[in-house]
Amino acid sequence: GLVVDIRHIMLVADMMTNDGSVKAIGRHGISGRKSSVLARAAFEITSTHLLRAAIIGEEDHLDGVAENIIVGQPVTLGTGAVNIEYVPPKK
Image (cartoon, rainbow, N blue to C red; front, side):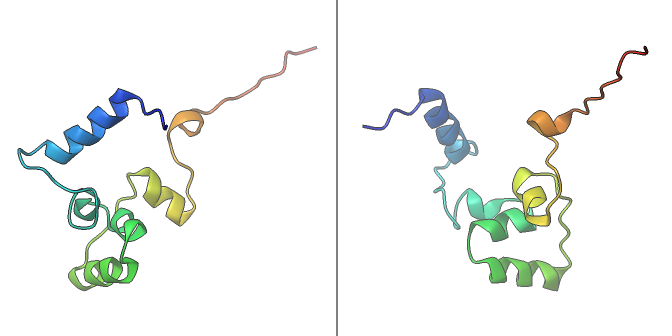
């Protein structure tokens, strides 16, 4: 079968129960309650999320990975979080 690290399962369980009630992982649960318009739109029912956000003037500050990928910006995580400069030695 599939081997899943227990820490991944614990993380998901924590997200599902962090407010004292059990939430689904879907549009009516965790994924549908994201603060980012683009993150919600990337998950499901894109046009509904974008239209609703446009009507109420909601802004997206592009703080997450999904949002930055959608708009084509580099993500400032991992190797994107550092700038490496090479200064060749003088001869």
